Image (cartoon, rainbow, N blue to C red; front, side, top):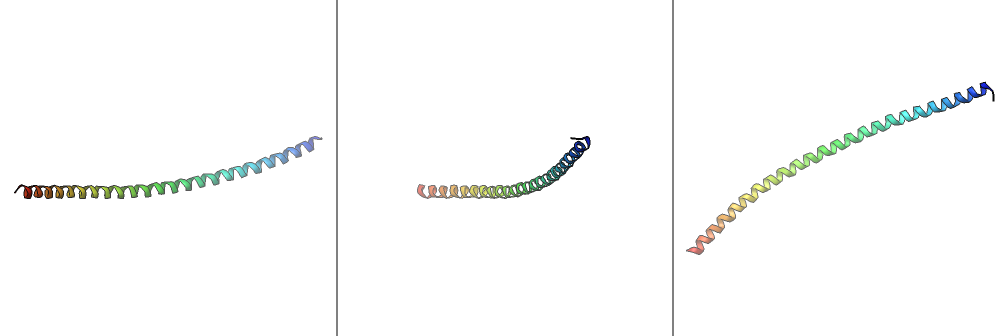
Amino acid sequence: MTIDERLEKMMERDEALSRKLEMLASLHVELEQQMADGFAEIRARFAETDKRFAEVAARFSETLVFINRLSHVAEAHEQRLDDIEGQ
């Protein structure tokens, strides 16, 4: 094999490697974009979950207020029944 043949073969390999590197770089950029898009979607889902959790927490607070009110009503009725039975 002559030096010219070796140089030509090395140039072919160099070109093949260059094409592969360009393809890998392109794939890397595409993957980074997909990951960024995926993270944006995940952040949006977390924001929606936080919003729903806040709504549920508010409803539980309201429910606790109602339960306390009912407890006072039940105590008042129990006291009235005790007063009626005591008469």
